Image (tube, rainbow, N blue to C red):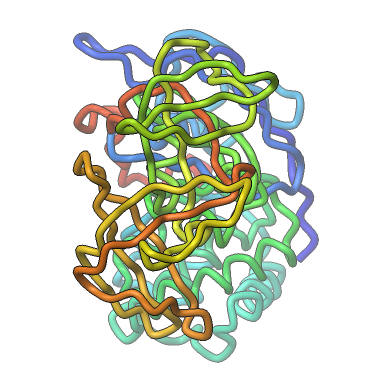
Length: 385
């Protein structure tokens, strides 16, 4: 299968309902063949944005182009997109082959050619030989592969996926993540994937757009968002983090943040330039040592107490309480465990460059789900009607 991905561009897209704004001034460019994930909590606007791209929801304002073509007046079946839903949306009375062939039949592809394309799609998702079965005879993971085969069989330039792995258990979900990555490489379509699962986004994506309150907080690669988050919301939503807050003052090109009477150093200045700031450090960048041990020069150090040890197999996670009650998380690898134990008085240490200095703004989640975040059950994107 040799599909070619299309460029998607959303410019100042807004979706209003009578009593709420589901999408607020979203601008995003997705390059041809890119795997872009829209990540955020329920009600953040990610699914509404996906539905606008699909044509299931009309934007109140703004523009959308796919492959350089304006989409505002085009129905879903004329947008050259495939769609994969969370709950498969397979026809129970049809065989696997008939389900996969459905969009080809709607497009009046000749019977002989349909069979070739169905066989190729089933081979792509590693379900060769399953064409005669009914959906009820398949596992959840196999049904999702059928849904993926049906979405890619007509070689669309864009494939949209709305929480496609949300109903599966962890082990199966991880296995299908690898399958989706492989299919993306093979078919070459532009993939737009919606999820609220941070780990899933990190594993799958070329880039991630983090949504909250109807807008995009930050767009970047997984490593950019994880290592250099642009806001407290991004830092605390994407993976675990340890955050200390305090008053800030400039010290040359750096900032000094006073935390509970002690000072820590961070590079740069907080984006908003206000009098208070937060320093975010990822758990694997924190080091824990006994309180009596000497602290190396040039690092940040705060006193704490170990309040919890959590065994992880590959290591352990420590919960550390600062004197003001702030709880930090430190992650240690199995071959580099410190000697500290539950209840010990310790010193938490990190290198200055490992801390990210941000405005001390609350990292609140989005509002409850709006009507626009409800998933349509129709197969309009796959139908020629």
